[in-house]
Image (cartoon, rainbow, N blue to C red; front, side, top):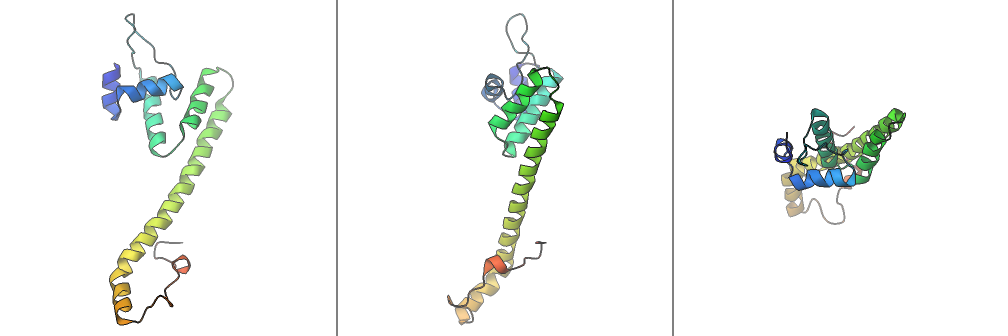
Length: 141
C-alpha cells in the first residue's frame, strides 16, 4: 500500500503520516527500490493506533516514547505497557470529567423552562439561586 492509500484509509493526510514518521510517532516505513514508502499491516496498525490515541488526547511526546521503545530491541514490554496504562488512566479521568459535564448540561436543559419560569415569577432571585456544585444530577453517582 502506498502513502496516498494509507492516508485515505484512515482519513489522514499524507503529510500527517509523514510527520508521524519523521518525529517518531510511528516507526520508519520501509521503502521500495524507487524510494517510495510501502506500508505493511504493521505500519497500518501503528498509524491507526497513533490516530486513535491522538484523537483521545494522548500527547505526541507519549506516542514518540512508546514508538521509540519498540525500536530499542531490548526487553521493553513492561515500559510500553506502563505507557499504555498511564494513557488509559488519563483518558478515564477525562471521561469522568466529561460525563460530569454532560450530566450538568442535561440537568440544565431538563430544568431550564422551570428555572426560567421561577425567575420570572420571583420565586428565584439572585439571592436564592441553587448551588449547582451541590446538586446531584440523575446520571451522577
